[in-house]
Length: 485
Image 1: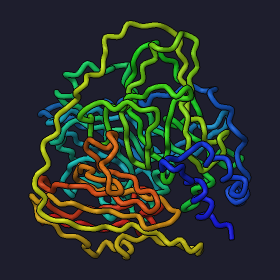
Image 2 (image 1 turned 135 degrees about the horizontal axis):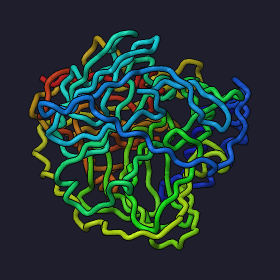
Image 3 (image 1 turned 120 degrees about the horizontal axis):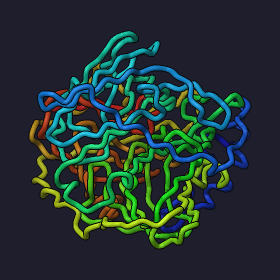
């Protein structure tokens, strides 16, 4: 029998090298398209590269006194033109889709006062941040409609491209899908001392997918991997970006609930990855393609000086679900002018501290029902999330090696650990790719994969969660609690 999960498995077809291929896009939707469109008439197809890539506004602080930057954000519904000529109701931070960017500096605290003007509870998680538990945005630590919640971020960690999003349990997947996310870019002296592209040439881009009905409204169906076949970049479908013939830094974020991206330039040109979740890599990594599972970030530099003015260069996605026409192109870079370029990518970007001696080891299994049932559940170590249960207790100051496995045969997962940035030690028994050589807070796990990481718990004490960041999966129970004593 053809099921949604068997179709997703087809979309995750691999070559012998273990890489998704463009061919995996093509056979999938021949069978899956009818199911994806069945619940509601779909919006008309969007012609790509007709709208410019918008840049989310940088949020201005209300106050900078006392060495602290204070911000105010209101969570509210609004309507935005996402598809041409149609108004879509979305959930927003300060009316922006995606939310405004917060720029912060290591060692300088940030306070954000969130007012909930929605008709449902919310919780705001700063993803990748080292914060005390009362400001972590835990799944059950919500604030009610009509109330205000203040989050304090000490920023006692190095530079990193972080992001903030809703985390209210059983609602987080739909809240994020409908718009509740934004970038939080933390910098420090190490990063600023490097001659990397900066200012107007340092651009955050949030990538995601969506499904729209014929009226242009977002359609949310739990675990709807096949139906979300419109790709958005900074909230617009298949936009273009006018660039100068020089180097740019792009801070890529996969803010999708379920979709994995494998990104490449249409001409196979070089992409230089300089950073991942927790900041700069030790050394730049030159590649022709890169992975982004949900919640992962990759900072990359693309040098457009190798292209003549007039070049139109498509950033492609080479993995389904979706047809190549739907999900094979992401955005287009249009080289429109020349420009001087004092920037460069040094051969050494940062020095990571040596890993401490491990004080313990654990195994974690992420699994989801694959029997085709109507109400599948997600599990960590065979258990569905229970907010009244602590699943793992670690000692403050310990450094542990966690071996994380996805035993599913068709369903991909990933693993996100709150509070800490970890180091990837192994992937399937082999040394990790250079793209995973830096600090990470989220790591992908394709079907059958095992990843070994080392995490050090030397900052805050308290209770935090770890979970699959395919948010539909965590809402279905694939989450657990960690207590640091």
